[in-house]
Image (cartoon, rainbow, N blue to C red; front, side, top):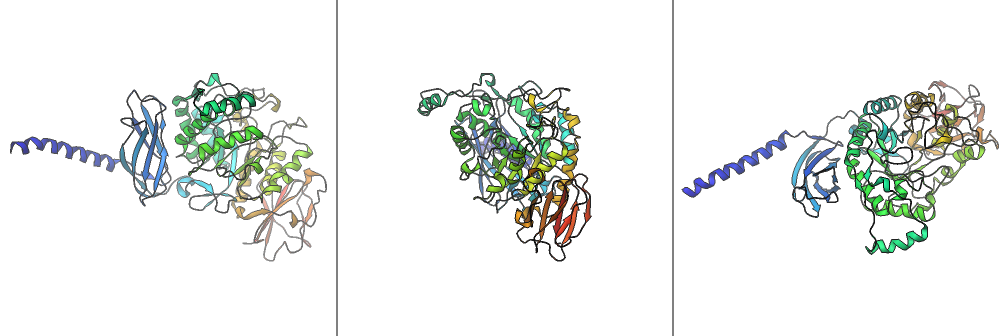
Length: 568
């Protein structure tokens, strides 16, 4: 009797703990399908930031998923995860080395299918389509990439200004913004609070000569030469968390540039390979539950030794597992992709036609490598991530790119490969410019820039809304380049007058871009019975019906126009 009485309080205490646990789980808010589940874990003060945390999750259907956690300062580690199934998810944690508070923790959460207010919560994360030609959501809804360039904005902006920028771009129909996630880099010594991405950033040194790298690599592999390690700065990234979340909450896809690779002192070049991989994995664990795509580095040629180095980095960071779509950004008018065709981590191809304005540049855009190589296997979406920025000085003429020259490059880029999307840039926005009357500090030859706020209103950005509405009204994902649609190329040898044409494989959809209006004749049989013909004005978004005279079309004037033939 005495034994039973003695054990009863213990039983009651255990029952109370169980009820409290159940109540906590019951009161927890369900996580929306394709939303974000986040959980924090506390470790003893003796745990080092290098302690690795992984979380093994079991889906309602019994599927297993493993995600990495990340150190968030002090004794706090976090894990973020995007559930793709409604129902009850269960998890268990592991840490290396095993650490109390991080290792062996168990729990569960509930995911529910609810009507979301953004395209991502309605249709799911963005992925590459099954045929490899375009982007789509998890439910199969096509996703048109209409990107805006704001490389420095997320790092430098104040919260209220970043939201104002995003609201403007969302109103204009943009679907993607691409930005950097590491400072220092050229032009951005630190964020708006003076924080840098990781400790030791001021000690970055350019990589040594090829001979010195070859000499030290075997020693590093054998552990005989200590590699410098960086320590992530959670204060920098907690501020960036708000910027990335805001991108998604405005219905925009975050295209995050994980490092930069232009100058020798940029993080992607100066850090040892292993540390670049650590940095990328940290960023993926922190932002992989957001709606993102990854750009491994930027403004790099990817040739010779450096090209092989970036292949190794991307394989180590992303190889052999599921992840958001991955690409990397090359220098202007470079096409390294024939050497990357067999890289499994490379999900889509981006290129930079750049800011030139001579005949060779124009010819490269509409008839160069994208047009020449889009059929090379395996198929991947192809996007011009950096056509000429509106207001940026042309490399050859020294005159600012107008809305017309920017728009012309963009329409050419949408028709020189299977249509997947394109990006736009405004001089002043890309650099988050605030120094009135001067060029960006790290790009003095680009010309005096407007402030980012003034540059938001450059006419080309509004014209991108018209572009998005036009392609949103047709089955753009079925388009393939087809220069043989034209009976002849009226431009002759003048690349500025080149007419680009695409059509669907069924032939029920045709899009033709005329950069200087005029007349154009299609081959016999291209125009079908009961096919509606329209002129689309890319400056105003206006449409007007038209018809052919013996397969010949006459544009309304000598400005640029888009001809649409559509069978509905």
